[in-house]
Amino acid sequence: MSRLDSFIARMEAQRDCLNFLKDKIDRLPGPLIEVGLGNGRTYDHLRTLFPGRDIYVFERKVAAHPDCIPPDNRLFLGEARASIQLAARQLGATAALIHTDLGTGDHAANMAMGRWLGPALDMLAAPGSYILANQALDVARWQRLPEPPDVPKDRYFLYRVR
Image (cartoon, rainbow, N blue to C red; front, top):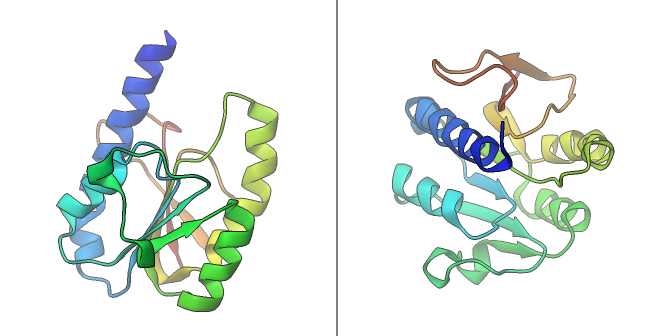
C-alpha cells in the first residue's frame, strides 16, 4: 500500500470511528479532547459532530488552518507530557471522548510514546468515556472495543473506560 493510500485509509477509519461514536458520546457529559491539532481537520469534524460541546485541544505549536484553531481558553500549548498534566489538574477525569493521533513514522518512537501517553490520557478520562487512538494504548481500566463496521482491524483503536 502506498503512503498516500495508507493516509487515506487512516483518515477514513478516523472519520468512521468518530461518526460511529457520535450517539454514544451524545449521551455522556463532559468535554471532548483532541490530542494533536495538526491542520485542524479532526477538530473541525468534532465541532460539526458535537456542536456546542467544549473541545479542548493539545498542540505543540499551532499551524492549523485559521478557521480550525480553537479559542485560547480551550487550547493547551506545548509538549504533550507537560500540557496533559496541566489539563488533568484543571479539568480532572471528566472527558467523554479523547481522540489522539500523535506519532511519527518511527515505530519504536511511537511505541515508547504510547507507554506514557495512555496512562497520561487516563487522568482525563471519565468512567464510561471513550478513547480513540491511532495506536494501541495499554491502560488497565480501558476495555478494547471492536472496530466499527468497515474499519479494518488495527487501523484505529477504540477503548471504553470501565
